[in-house]
Length: 398
Image 1 (tube, rainbow, N blue to C red):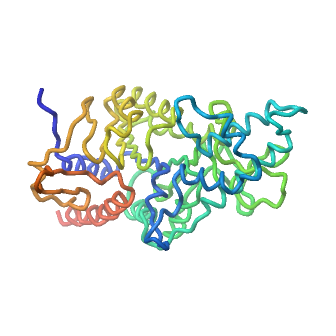
Image 2 (cartoon, rainbow, N blue to C red):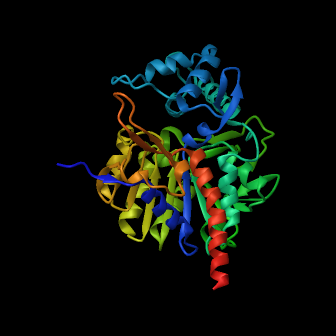
Image 3 (cartoon, one colour):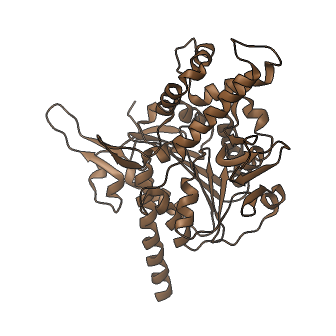
């Protein structure tokens, strides 16, 4: 059977058209791959602004070796050989805190475990508390796109990341946004405003579904955003071992509920970038709402070859309004396709989104779509501002 092929430029054009509509509600889901894509100088050339989960795990485990973090690693070793991440470790530590009582588990008392949890959260905070290197990163390009194109509905941003990069970019571009908290010094979480707010279209909505390094819970259970002056306050990053249950505590559930609400109503376009579809809970929300609303569509932009993302393929097989666009091919309309090298010789305005290699010796010609790289997506969005303004001028001329 002949292999199905598609033109990558055509798929990018479809994406552009989906983003160009001023009537559609548009949202982005920014995964862990987005901060990793931002490069900064180091002694060996460049490095990621924020480490990926594997490097973050190694760094924190090395730093906390005196806290016997290795004992936790031994406890959660996978029989399949899958390496635990710092999120797995944090989840297990929190689970042990719930069950240890007044006794000991592997020589850990409740006080030991609470200290280890606090130290892990502090190390995570230190690792992701980074400043954007300049005013022209992909985060800034996304912010510029949000503020540069008139539309009928606010753009929504969903992210499981707990860094402050998107907030920084929005503020640098003077884009007002609402994140579920009200106030200044210690902003308080307000569910009523989330469920009933009506924002001007020029505002953005930011939903941090796994918490943030500047979210806190005090001893009375009150959740606030800002600076903590008490050592008794706990950072609210990553829902952890009680992911399904704790996410139903505010504000996790409210943030995730926004994703379901966005996809469940009307004409909606969700763009994912840096998201590998390994979060089963978020996948369930996306699939359920896409299946229930045929007017909603999700474009999953993937950095590497499509075979690298089995979970994403499993999701795309279940619903036709989830399209995957990857390095070497796509999954569109219920079928997996490869990029067509012949048709792609035609010149299009999206050449920076596509990498073409001519045949050389024993190496065959190849074509790769780079829109799943957050840096390329940022450039793509920035270019859409001029495209939209040109369309407005043409319309006024008529």
